[in-house]
Every structure is written in structure tokens, then in C-alpha cells.
Length: 269
DNA sequence: ATGACGGATCTAATCCGA
Image (cartoon, rainbow, N blue to C red; front, side):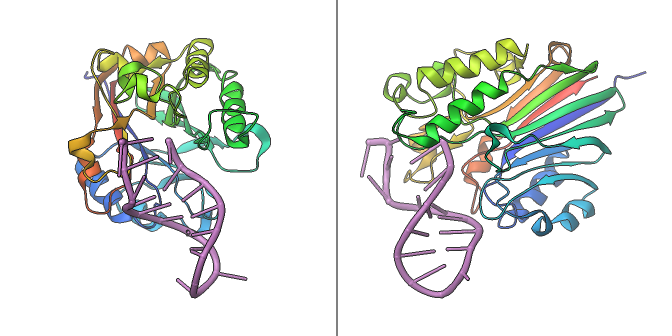
């Protein structure tokens, strides 16, 4: 009997209401089992449930708020144990988790939107950077296996940890998202929780790979000054079962795009 | 020039993203 296939996608959509058409096209063309969205920028009752239901994504864990932030996990399969953790007790909406019962057994999926951290990389002068560092610190408690269920952690972590996760390591060392205190913090989260970085398992660290390009560039594709801010991590036993991983760069060139592109991971369970 | 764009908000200019 063939092993069941499981496909997960993550995408910072930068307003799910504005870009629901792009989301529908994406789901029709790539048919993941689960899609984790960040920056939905709407309240729970404004989330376009109907559009997802009509495409077969009948199970939605939505944790939104007015105007900013917000995460949602939509699935073809039932979701249970849905909960959110209020990291750094800010009362904002940056995490939602759930357990999916796949044909290959249960998987817990954490969906994160880590704070961007503002402009200045100094926690004393810049409260947003302080918030980001505290958020990362609290993530160190999270382990990749809970209650014998393997975990997946995805989302916009707003940190590009490796040299080839940014267009210029030297020029970005003092820029929030690639400073040593952030990259070391993220590496600690990964090491302490026994997480495997699936993008870098699939694409060697010698190769540049980005998931975000600024809106401000005149020509994002030609300049190609991107960063790898979006991540897919898993427990080691799931990492062994990864069969494919795609960073959908072309999505940055769609009409009225998000500044982030989807990342997809496929497993043979 | 990294790079001045683009989203939401009590529609106008302000906050936020990274």
C-alpha cells in the first residue's frame, strides 16, 4: 500500500480579504491539505470562511484581530485541540495551533507571526525590538514533539538566520531581521525544541533562497534583494518523510501580490 | 540607496510592515 501524502503550505497573505482571489487560485493550482496564513488583518467574523469551504477547506482555525496581525489555519481535514498562546502577553494574535488527523497519523501544526521588530536593533531604544526578542525567547519552550504527536512549526518568523537567507549578509548585519542577536535567538529556538529547518534540508545553505521582497523596490525581480523570513520546521521523524519543498517565487509577480510568497512542503507519511 | 510602496483605519493622514 502506498504511503499517504500530506502537503502543507504557509503564506503571509497581507490581508486575506483583499487577496482572497489569489488564495483561491493558489489552492486550486497547488491543492495543499492545509494552508497556514499570517497577517490576515481581519477579525474572526470577517474571515472569508465561505470561499474556503467552497474549495473543500471546511475546517478553519481563525485567530484574527482588527487591522493588524492575525493568523489562520485552513484544512481539508478536521482540526482538533485548537488553541492560541498569547506570547509576551500583548493581547495580539500571532499564534494558532491545532492537531490534524492525517491518514498517516496525527500532526500538530503551529502557525506563527513573529513581530517584525521595528527599525532600530536596540531593545532599550526600540520597544518593538524588545518585544521581538522576548517573543523569540518564549518560543524556546516549544518542543517538536508533544504528547507523542510530531509537530510542524510554520509561519512568518521575521528572521533570516543564514548568510544566504539575505541578498547581502554584510549589508544586513545591523538591519532588523538579520542581526546576530535575532539569528542566534532563532537558532536557539530550533536547537532547544529539536526542530529541523525543512527549507534548508531541501535547499543547501550555499544557495540563496528568499520568501519576501520589499514592495518598495522598483523591480523586485531584477534587484532580487529578498530575505528568507518564512519558515517550515518539523520534528526529525517528519523531516525524514519530506519528499518535496517549493518556495513559490512566481507568486511575488502576481497582480496585487503579497510581499511574501507561499512555501509548500510535501511528506510521504 | 534596501526602498519609498501598500494595507487598514470612523476617507485623511496616520500607523504599521521589515
